[in-house]
Amino acid sequence: QVQLVESGGGLVQAGGSLRLSCAASAASGRKFSSYVMGWFRQAPGTGREFVGYINWSGSSTYYADSVKGRFTISRDNAKNTVYLQMHSLKPEDTALYYCAAGNRPVSNRGGYLYWGQGTQVTVSS
Image 1 (cartoon, rainbow, N blue to C red):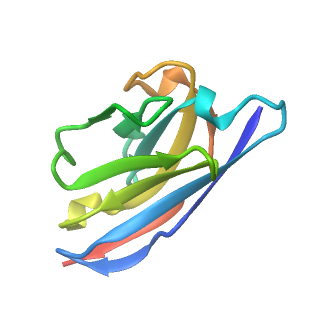
Image 2 (cartoon, one colour):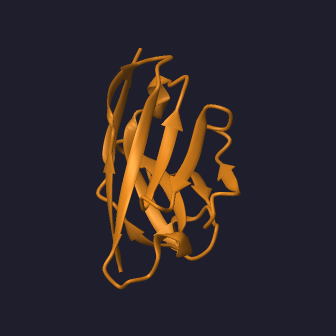
């Protein structure tokens, strides 16, 4: 099992930037680098939406069309941390952002085993 804690959310004006972090602690002894890490978001009244994922080594990423070119996912396996760098933020990016850990690089939420509690991002117009 792994525990995930997101941080870095906040209020930002449209066009601004934020960097979210997700720190992982593995109770089972399984290495952080053995997990694919995903980011999802959920706005009020909507379902949890895929944002992107990064593979085990960080050599490959994949993004939803809605964030492609604006968001970047990276990871530091030595620090057991994954990041979501967000630029050119829009009001429609307002949501609770979650990181998740899974075994395979997939975009469906069902493919992820462990979830954080989320961090709120609010983009004002």
